[in-house]
Amino acid sequence: MKSLWTLFVGYLCAAMAAALGAEERTPPPRPSSAHAEAFTDAERRAVVEWTLAQPEVKNAVAGRRTRVLRVWSDVSKANGGSRRRAVVLLRDYDAGIAREVAVDLSTGSIDTRELPGIQPNAEEIEEGMSIIRRDPGLAALVADSKLELIGGFHTVSRISDDPCAREICLDFAFMRPNYEGPARYVIVNLSRGRVANRDFRPRPGKGLPRMTKKTSR
Image (tube, rainbow, N blue to C red):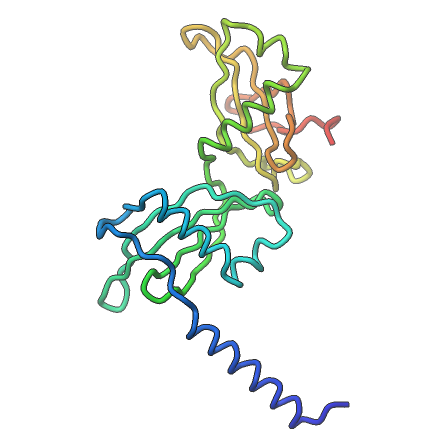
């Protein structure tokens, strides 16, 4: 059994290593423009690469399916001063949430918070539409030139045993000409990469029904 002194020394060494690692952390790349939200494509890629390489971010997303939704820069005011930040928004499909990772561009310090209900970006909407277009059960609707596939809104089910209560689900509609109304609502589960409901039927004024067909697994 280890002595208390050995345990103390081990703890002290670990604490010192962590402190040195924090002090030696190389700050992230700083944008060339002084204006908030002004990242070039190269700077955006560099910020994302740096952020995803940091231990606290790597540990949070390890083994999970994630996607970068958005990247921007802003100015945070604190303690009477202001600091330029980079903000990386990550979708975690396994946890059914988004994580906002804010990076101080001067020091490299990181703050992370979880955000529910974040709406999809263009890449997620296109992925959802592609899943619909590949689904054999929706082939007739996809082939109908009079119908337009629209939507892609992230909606959270309030029914506890519905996978869409904890996973990332988007709702779409096949719209009739002149926006005369939807011919069909469709739910896509992005966390599972498939259609969850080929004929979703909202009940106006009666609350949102179950989004996933019970026959779907």
